[in-house]
Image (cartoon, rainbow over all chains, first blue to last red; front, side):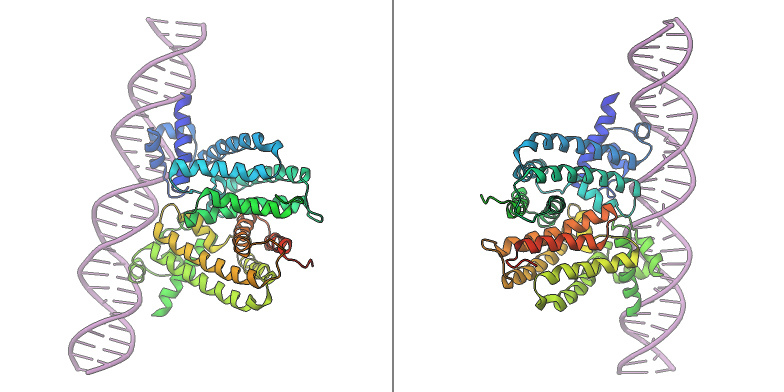
Length: 188
Length: 188
DNA sequence: TCCGTAGTTGACCGGTCAGTCAAGCGCAGG
DNA sequence: CCTGCGCTTGACTGACCGGTCAACTACGGA
């Protein structure tokens, strides 16, 4: 059925977040999804393929959230980040990191296929951020492309540091908001 | 001898950077350091203890680099990052990430002891950044503490994204430099 | 010279892991 | 009713892994 494959992807997404990619074995994944090994390999030729499916699942959810916030200007970006991370925080009781950032950090050096897969997500994000930056009323001399890259990096960096410090989603959003404010013409 | 323990730590540092913490087994570590299992356990009760030693090694090197750049103002921070990452890039042929950021992303959720160990490093960095921010000639209304946190996040975020994109150390430094410039009163 | 100790070695164990396989199930279509 | 197929099952394997251990060596001090 469709439901088994779905259960695998969903519980994998959860385990990758609460633990990490490498620390979770296929045996663990099967147990969490209440599926036997054979079924797993029926759907996914390898763990890496599962990871791709997990990435795509998260990417779809993020895109949706992005769509909603799109017309509300640059500051809505910080709000969207706060919303997503706040949801994770409530669900898992702590900051567990960015689904893409976690995988990027862990797998960029070991699995080139997964690396490019994650990189594609970041590229799409940056393009959307760039569009938002171009529409915004930026300070004189601010390059929209550079700012988009800085915002993306700021989000990832803040999330990473919040994760290692057991900080809250609010602190993440505050950092991102500060970066954006500093580059907008009109001060709030 | 002291040399065996040292070989273990050094080759572990290399393997953790070029691969990742979890993906490297104790057997791999022993092989890379040309040491037998028993010797390994003679020096380190567990892999996590080795990780601590690796963190301390990197932290000592970074502190030294920080000391040299300390009096040269905020912009020297970007230069220091560029130098360190450039060295890694040359040594390994690619951006391999920040030694602390990598471990933070991978282990924060799975090993609380290591998490606090890495967090302590970040805390010390942020304090030093804060001191540099307080001495700098900041734009009106810029909170030094907030800026210090933003710079730290920017560094980590830029490194992470450069890693997943196979970008260069220069791009990392450019992002950090842009963030700092945007908050300084005098424009270069 | 003898002893203690730090360091080293290689064999070894129990467990776990990714991945395979043959067989079975239930359903849909003919 | 039969057949084919998507999906499931559980047993199986061979490799590997973390960790232990007893024995050995080299050396520094008494």
